[in-house]
Image 1: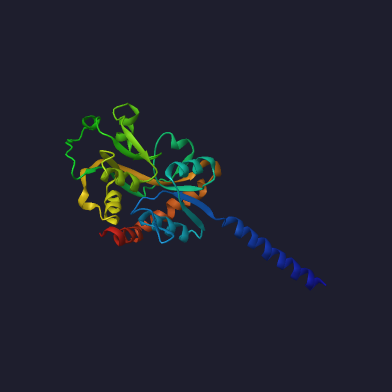
Image 2: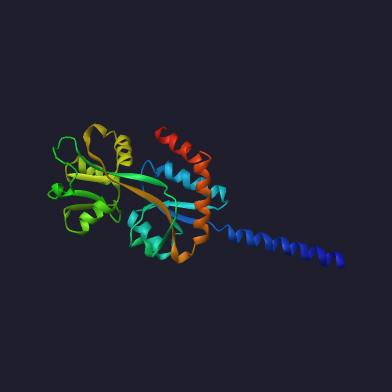
Length: 253
């Protein structure tokens, strides 16, 4: 009888341990945007440089994740309301600090570029005020760094067409529906290449600002511990060369 009681007790302890493990390994919901080559849909699977970095960190943490590509404004809303646990790659702004716990380490420094139609002659010497007469194409809810965001906020740049994706902006540029497309430089070139459109766009400025981008966690879901663990493992990946190897797979050394 005593042996039976001990056996039952052991079984219950195992069940409780498994339940605890399952609870701690709750799948995190991550959201992002279509932002090649950092994030994109590869035959039904979310892929890209940033995605592979993020996936490797969580793999080392034994933390299951699910990733959704959504319109950026919706991704931000999901993070703000706690429907999503984390978001990447995201620029840091004062408004977002109210609802997002940012990682300490930068995922990528992104050069914000200006693109024009190759058949359009626009002069630019580095001052955005020179471009105030032109129509810019931007994605809804996307920050393009302090310099451009401030130009919009101050009323220096007022003519804008908003779309749900960078690819839509490029198509509007090709059809001359907008004058300037603002986007991450390498990402813009990657999108143009995928559409065989590189000969038809011109890089007006390869970098009006270099802006750090991060992964951020929903404050309402209280993931500060996971955020800190992410930073620790990410730092290990930088030191052991994994980060550089992932980047090299896409863009070379």
